[in-house]
Amino acid sequence: MLDQITPLILTWNEEANIARTLEKLRWAREIVVVDSGSTDGTRAMCEALPNVRMVLRPFDSHAEQWNYGLQETGIASEWVLALDADYVLTDAFVDELRMLVPAPATAAYRMRFRYCVHGRPLSGTLYPPVIGLYRRRAVHYVQEGHTQRAMVEGEVGELGACVLHDDRKSLGRWLAAQDRYARLECDLLAARNWGELRWQDRLRKLMFVTPWLVPLYCLTAGKGYRDGWHGLYYAVQRGVAEAVLSLKLMERKLRGGR
Image (cartoon, rainbow, N blue to C red):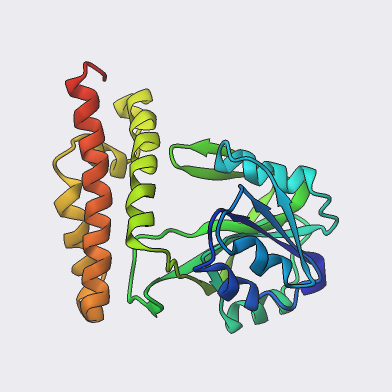
């Protein structure tokens, strides 16, 4: 099965992460990287490996980057493994891919994650499973807030082994990203009626609930108390992300928006 899969990765200034991600993809005949114009060492790290092919495309949205990678980069394999630059495959995950025998009706598989803080896997996180392995012609992406949804034509299976989500970029980069993400999420929440929202987004739209509820959940039901400072860091991080979104929603309300 590994010979039938092309890993596809999106990058922008990922020198803190990309080497670890690529190291676990040495089995791939070809890795396609769609880069948004990195100015750090990302491109040099990728181009140093013989099985990596880089394609440059100015960034407009994550969904359009993924669709471009699938449709315009010349990927020939039937299957694609879509990875963020901070996704690190475990040996168990690669072994599962190797032995996988998809049914004819199966078009995609969801991947589960273990979130890491400074390289340490946490006991539990809020990071949901995502569709990451799929038949190339069966998927396209749409943008929803700061995330992108894979739309699948066919049945979706589940992979058992986990992938590590291990982002080691600086705190400053993370904070800057939260401002962009919160703006997109704010626009999405404002555009939808109350009845169209998931329960999580209804809590967010209340503005004063999630900044304290989310870190409390991470430390208790999310088992962050088991992980010491790493768990506390993650809980505070998620609380800050929710607080930034709440501030964006308040700012919109004060300016006369919905």
